[in-house]
Image 1: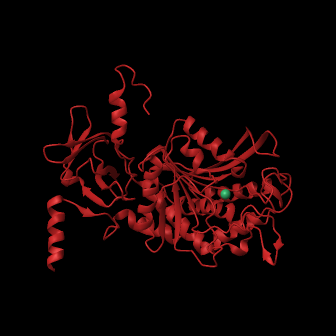
Image 2: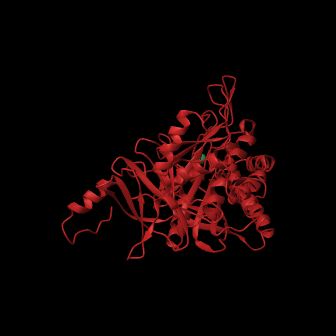
Image 3: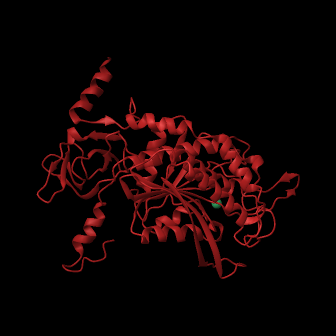
Amino acid sequence: MNLLRIAVALVLSTAGLAQEPPPASPPAIGAEVARLLANVDAERIDTTVRKLVGFGTRHVLSRTDSDTEGTGAARRWLRAEFDAIAAASGGRLTVALQEAVVPCTRPGMPRELAIVNVIATLRGSSDPDRVYVVGGHYDSRNGDGADGKELAPGAVDDASGTAVALEACRVLAARAFPATIVFVAYDAEEQGLLGSAAHAKALVDSGVRVDGMIGCDIVGNTLGMDGRRHDRHVRCFSYAPSGNDSLGRSMARAVAFAARTYVPEFGVKLIWRGDRYGRGGDHRSFFEQGVPAVRLSEPREDFSRQHQNVVERDGAPYGDLPAWFDRAYTARVTQVVVATLAELASAPPPPRVVNAQLRRDRYDTELVYELPEGIACEFVWRETTDADWTHTIDMAAAAPRATASGRWLATLSSVCLDDVVVGVRAVGADGSRSRVATPPEPDRFDQRARAPRGTETTGR
Ligand SMILES: [Zn+2]
């Protein structure tokens, strides 16, 4: 051991800190996740994309009376695929259609649209009211957003994301998880996120706790318009009302954690922005319901494919056709999704952080949180300017003690709260990690402190 390494080891041991994962030897959950990831099948993903493209158009106004063309045929096929998985799931998976008539404000479109989401639910074995969602939209469009007749193949936007949800369902339904996982093919994303808005509202209104949503939209093309291949990572967008520690950002970090741990040869690029300029996606519907939600999209979109008619102009092909779909890439994205959902649905629920304060005599951080008796946790921190967690403190080092009010008080030695962001996540017996929960930023405390007595009702 050279001098530098000795010095580093000394610093780490005195502070009780270690560098953030990936862990040297993944815990028990790691072997299980590896088995699941090995079952992700690029061939099946490719079959799904080609089958969906084969219906010609999946526009919300396209025909519903055919078994070979239009959106009706597409969703019947999707339902049959989910039904086949359910039949082999030993009763764990159930499939349903969510049908609704919803207002539409898009130019050239009817004021009301009948929409149909295809929803498969893998019910949790011990904590079924905690729910994770993954979805892609099966509807498509061409250059005219109101055209329900002409071809709108939508291979990448978004048969690819729909294929991720379906393949993740096939892989994950093979076993039981403590929490519930919901797999959705959304309708009418192209008409203003209508399908996902109806689903997010119905889920939240039903009283379940939706602890995370992954929207997969445009996750299948790797050839950029710059002629270069971009197939080594996926972009992960998340909204935040302010700062970098929204629920969405904590979900984004959970996705990045799962990718680093289980799919290390493939990256998740965290982008601290809700979506691309001028664009939206189904994760927004969940963000608006207060749910931790992210969007996954390929690194370099080919804008001569999306929302284009299938034509040739100046010798160049246009249209979202399967010729530019990269099945191996979409399989990688599916692995990231499967790893994230397996980890979160296996882990205990995230702790609830009640308060954080600086112990001013020693520059330690004290964290007060709620976590059921007998569930382990670990603490993380990072500089405010770092995108993701850089340091982990295990529970033994923080020595949490029960408070009189039934909460826990942990002390993070030599972690100066005023300069960094701290958080805590639950750790299951198999080593699975929950999302990280963080205390509110200090400006929130200031707002509360300034409010006159008796008027603290907004809870912003
Ligand atoms: Zn899309």
